[in-house]
Length: 150
Image (tube, rainbow, N blue to C red; front, side, top):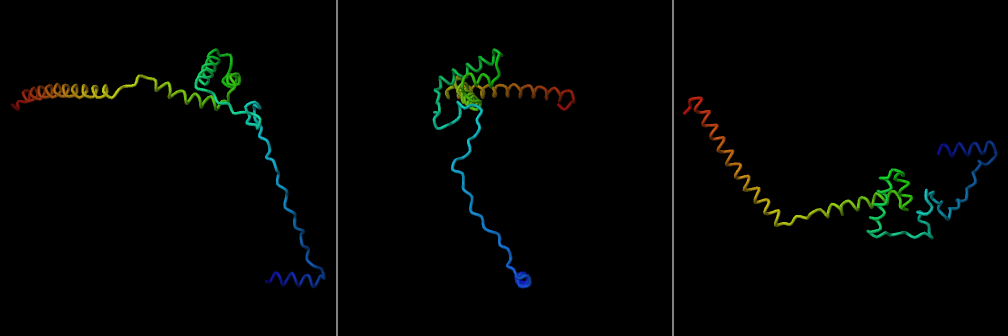
């Protein structure tokens, strides 16, 4: 309130109205988003491009081709990927997906074999415990003789 009184008093003394800033009109929004820079225009997701889906055989073929290019030592990983026509992220995704598949093909063990192995281990465990108990009894008896406790 004190400020209003002081502003009114100043305007009456000076005889002029206080200056009011003109309001700005809201700015226009851009209609299209700016295009992102992509390193490879062929792999960019533009409206005219089509997303390519590879079959498992094609993926395996491309992965082996990349491995062969790398093993020769003439090219780097990025060069090999460019020659094959896939991105680095796609390569790592395919490689990760291919690893568990190769591990699954290892010899599957049936449940019957597991049970048989478990029973064999239990029998061996009993046999070894008996041998250990006999040796400990013999050692105990020998120590008692030496100490004269018997």
